[in-house]
Length: 176
Image (cartoon, rainbow, N blue to C red; front, top):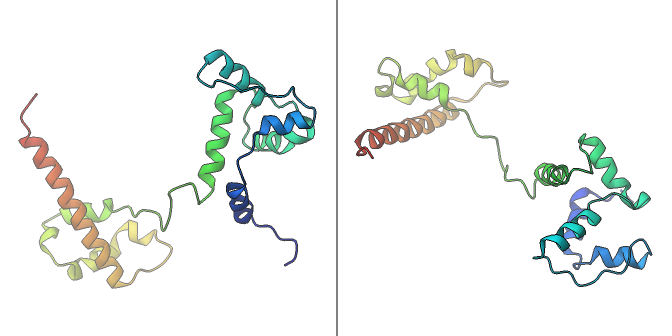
């Protein structure tokens, strides 16, 4: 597929690109005065530079930013909306958001099943039929193999043990 430039490749190129001074690039185009060495620890200087950097004033150069603000229904005049936009873009990219793998399973229905009527004494193999009767299981879009249900029950038992240990520790902790 000629001409295809996936976002992941563009991102990799952008990350590997040598660090550039964007203000110097704008000055070279005659869009701003040449930048001076800035002391970022001075609050007044930082505020003035941040205001200049975060004001959409360069027309065509700012079109991608304005499009992004519009898409997220954010206001480019609000500095917190800049932060929100950057966060949303970073969070939506798998390289920067820690959401690898499958979503976490909700073990609460299984933990609840284990706590009812002495079910914790029964083997996982015995509990599989009870799990299949749960609304939680019926709402799944697929049928799980018995081995998978047993694995989930093992995880639920570990979670139940952790919960019990926390409660015991909390009750044994001396009052402040």
